[in-house]
Length: 360
Ligand SMILES: Nc1ncnc2c1ncn2[C@@H]1O[C@H](COP(=O)(O)OP(=O)(O)OP(=O)(O)O)[C@@H](O)[C@H]1O
Ligand SMILES: [Mg+2]
Image (cartoon, rainbow, N blue to C red; front, side, top):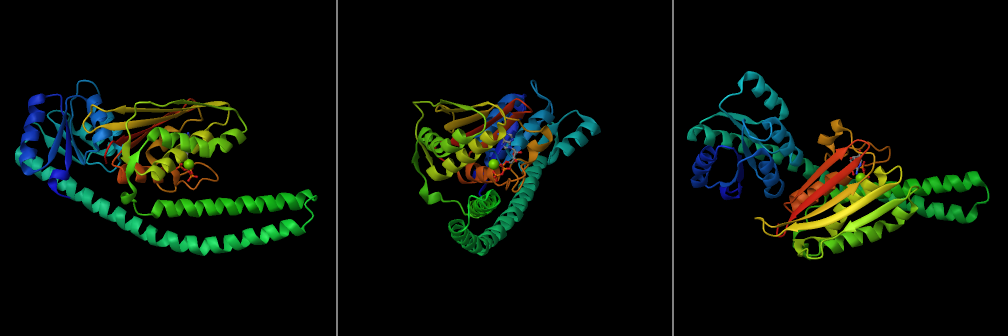
């Protein structure tokens, strides 16, 4: 990665100290983003997707550990270097456990800073390489598996149709058994499709001016039969910004993201529930971005599960592949340079926020 493409977010309430760090990094070709509080730093990280964060230990509004946790919530792999004047051993161990990558003593010396940045960047590139090797091997394995599994599934589906025609469907046991086989065949087919979607390389060439409100309407249309067939009433409320500018995106991929998130929301609502979808934009921010919020009043998510939601194959459902959110993250973060963030409270509900730059 060329250095000008490496974004360093500096979060430090001491403007002089933040400025000095930027002055060291900018001539070396890094691009820097300055922030003077924890909350502002989290907000800026949510739409700038920094490659490295330099976080001051002492902040006026939030504990540095909380800022670190929230930043790791956006991207678990992001290197965070802590700059501290005070703190001591316990604070260092705490921050290390929470995922800090490196430490610097304040006032930060130019040589130490550049070495630390170089170190964490090299480690991140190595991790990304391992990750992409994993994707590469999954990418080779899935199409092969899909082929091997789908062919017999088609044959089973065909044979089932023949059985259905010939059997006495008035016999409940036979009718039920046939229905079970049909549902399981369908589920396996869907699982293979999710694996294929997950391992497919990004379709950059199909980026076009996209109306996100249209994407939402189209996803809701596709899911209308699921919402109607749901055992409990789900009230759908949309608040779509009429002035939302079109953004450069892949319509089908973003539709897939909305579909997966809406499906999760519907599945989480075991009782009567409310599903809200909002769109909005921040046309004056740099870079400009659009936001989609999907809010449900479902079961909510156990706090201990929050760090794993985007991991491939993580699922708490007996019939879940655990690929829905992993695919969402791949599409939003890797393919569109956006952010996806989940906030949830047990027994209250879940809010998923998707932030997409106007131009990735
Ligand atoms: N809106 C939500 N409410 C409650 N839990 C959720 C919500 N969204 C996601 N989850 C949790 O995150 C897990 C992972 O979601 P993900 O969509 O990746 O997989 P899945 O829904 O289990 O399977 P599938 O691959 O069929 O989507 C879910 O199993 C569930 O525990
Ligand atoms: Mg899902």
